[in-house]
Image 1 (cartoon, rainbow, N blue to C red):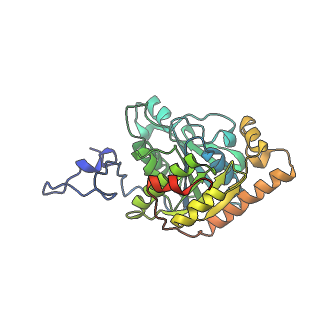
Image 2 (cartoon, rainbow, N blue to C red):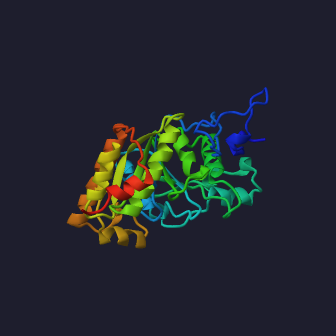
Image 3 (cartoon, rainbow, N blue to C red):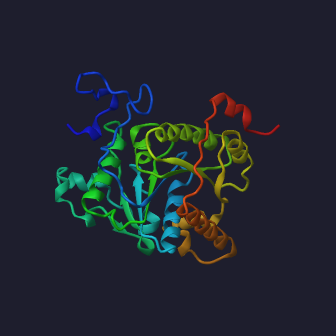
Length: 307
């Protein structure tokens, strides 16, 4: 039996007594094999409401790190497997796809079967996920990291970026937090995005009790203003790490299957590129960890909005 795929509520000590779930009472999240660690790379997990622009943010942040001369690996953690297409100019097969071709005999895989080089040398992997309703995405993330480790693909990596699926609370959502140093939250300046952010703050806080991950700040995306984000951040003890406005050039970069660093130059684009480079530099230096305290749902409702 593989411990990586067993819910914590089913694990027992040698005397038969149940193990207390490390993420709190009632936790049934997947516990990854503690022996499978990424290594010396700095690891960032990008979270946020579904459709908020996490993949755009992750890919351009990967590109910015590569511009700094860092060796970067981006891991998409969504069954849609669309995290890396602006880096590679194509939809990649997922780890689950390639495992299926060898009847899940991982030892038969070669690195080139599931790792692909993208823009400026960024290495790209799409973990994928099980068919809807059939399994846990946390197991997939664990198997992906295990494969990368077995093929020695993490030894020469400076930065690993996990681009995580939207605002859910399953094991697939939480698994990257067991590897990450910092978790960044992407949000827009609206109620729904901030409400989702509050749930993510809660999840990160739970994992921070037992793992090294800490909140690294908030990335405002697709937003001209940040007044509602600022109001929420001030209330719970968070700060803005970067701000990317709702610009047409960002939308067009996705349609062109390109990073922002490949688009035709313009003053507004250069400002966005500088912000990505500044964010990457700040994260590389470590960034301030935050011990934010999430709000009650009703309190968020009362806090946000206009008087």
